[in-house]
Image: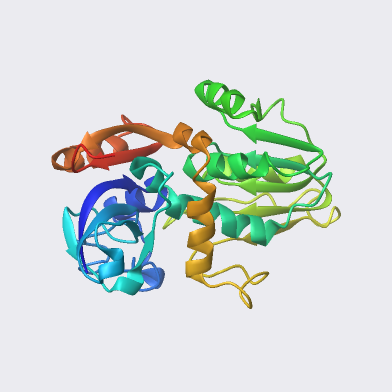
Length: 297
């Protein structure tokens, strides 16, 4: 099918690592995105948050809006099996978050929060905010969103989630999701755990090698750090759910307008090279930068 792009989104963590040539040689093959052109470290065509409209293809999909794990590009041809139809009540710009929310869904399957749990999310970037939006519906005993940026506290309050800085965050957590991609954030996540608690690590550090505080009371308190990565469906659901099921769940969740808090104002496709340089230099947004290809929403 031929798809005309309406909007795409920059997945900050991974795309900036690719932009900086920060993908370690040992995982370059495994970190290929589905429709990548070229080989890492570069030059490559990379990205996987694309929303478009079908211009040619199977009759039942003509003119439908679809999500595809395709890089930033104005038109592209993919198999019909590579797209997922977007619900009519999900705006196109919000739909670019499907890949991010899919990561959060996988993390929820991995962490399995239980009723009454004390939960913290460390890092209020795209993934952390998506997790907080989903977690706020759970019957938890406590939910805090931890970030060093005071502006993120305002976002958290608008979402109905309690914000906290690292120093005032409540401890004795049953479960902590870490999504700050910083050494300090991981240390905070471990510090907030109660005995025998678990950190679900969503950050990818690329070729960086953060120090992890495994001394002191880490062992005597029997703490756990467990990786969660969207490349595979969580083992807790893999027998009964595939990637397409997980993506459909993410798109269904995006009916919630709260996810608009993750979106930065759109910029034009022809500005993308400068936008990537700005993000790399720390001048851009910490939210999902939307790239627009047309006026249609």
